[in-house]
Image 1: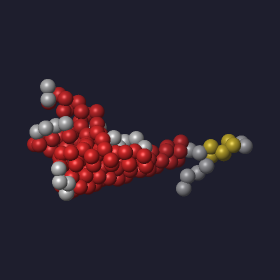
Image 2 (image 1 turned 180 degrees about the vertical axis):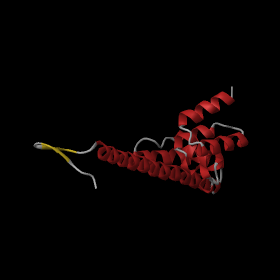
Image 3 (image 1 turned 60 degrees about the vertical axis):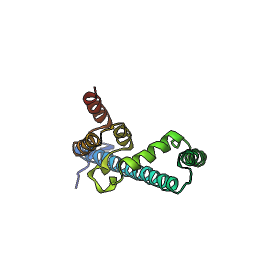
Image 4 (image 1 turned 180 degrees about the horizontal axis):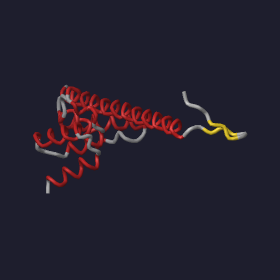
Length: 153
């Protein structure tokens, strides 16, 4: 138990107690951010999966796919606001196609920004290596981006 120090009329808490509470708050915020990020990455992957499934049931694939993205973008933007442009929906679709087994890999800790950057790596083996290294080494987006840029020059 922490002993509260009294200095006359005011009470002061020991610095280590305050520091411990600050660390608990910081850790809680970090865990909350990670949970929200993972939920959104999962949602984007699932959206990509559903877009691909819907496209595969369409008769004229190319035109049908474009119409799906336009209609879906309009509906989602109206309901949820920014973040669901046709371009972003295309990225969600590519995300699913590029990482079909994503939730069976250690890469589940990467953010959407990491995955968006990884989508630009055209060599599947290189992309897999970057994803694995980024997850294992806990690379920030900036580190991943820098490493990809260095090796693609």
